[in-house]
Length: 497
Image (cartoon, rainbow, N blue to C red; front, side, top):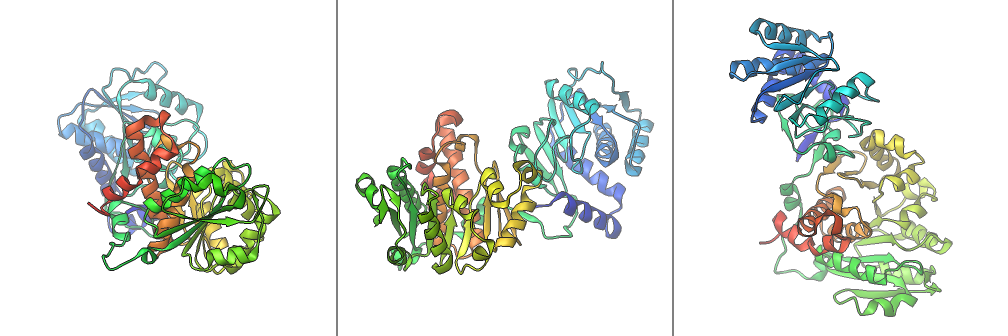
């Protein structure tokens, strides 16, 4: 796992490191050295510097370039300097570094490489008009663009921006921040690397999940085992309006491919014949219904959940009074791991939180941003400002595990936070949530720690999507393509050879 620090955690950690271990000027030079070592420099080269320590990293970098015999120009956007920044700026002047003051006629197209040292991770809000015009010129320059710590204009906690530098390489300093992964980040950073400069976290960091972590969490399959060893799971969904009796069958296949021992597909009795021919390895559990909409019958649900380790609930089930009764029954009576998705999340938004908190089952919620807005009552705009924070707060408040979907996925139980960076644009298509729910239903049955299980499922889902996109492209791929690559994704993680 790789540490990811919130902007505030990074600020506190930086301050403590300076106070107790490493002088601030030395820390700035370490940052510059990290940037220097991360790039194959190609001149002519321009370093755009704003004010503060982000600019200071640029001045310190210029001294290293000088010593390496690489000519560069410092392009100043203002006359403000941090104390350490001023120290390295004065050294640049003594060395005779070319220093230019930015104006509207400054031509960036003459530079092969442009280094962005304008705004740091502490930036929030909207970019000033004068800085916006500079960012626009950087993006139009045609140069190879390197951003120091984070792309100027991008929020370090949210990965959101009204305008920001689009980099070829972003060199994170100290530790990654959430803004390197969330929301817009993947669209504005072609590559990113992190440089450890000796800053130790003050508060517990978030954790970026790596392939080896998932491999470690997936238990080895033994010869002396059977289907019960790896868990019975139930998928409850379907309704008249839900086109997918077949999609339920495909959801069952996803769960089987993801390692479930047995999958029960519970659906309205009227859809039984539509789905029968499409289910091979799984079993069908018909539920009473009215015109293909599930009708809650306690005895049926009690039988269904009596021996299952996981239940995935809500996929196309509808939001009737009957399905709400079903969900309430699960919350009050089920003792396993309950994954709530799609219509189930809509139903949950109308249920008293005390019922959720008092449930004996381990609850997993899988909202995308709009569903999370409905659950929390917050606006999408507010959530996007700091999605990790709000996911933590809601998980803690409801005693659940929250999987907040996005370009990168946030998983938290209110205490630990895992981020998975797998996934791709081709997964923005109908049915992708079904694939994820099927994977989660399986892995939560055989990985004991629920937060790790959910994170592993998110990682597998994103990796399968990436493999599918390599085959079909982002425009043409469908959710079933992701499903078809689950086995290859799991094998490539190291589950089997």
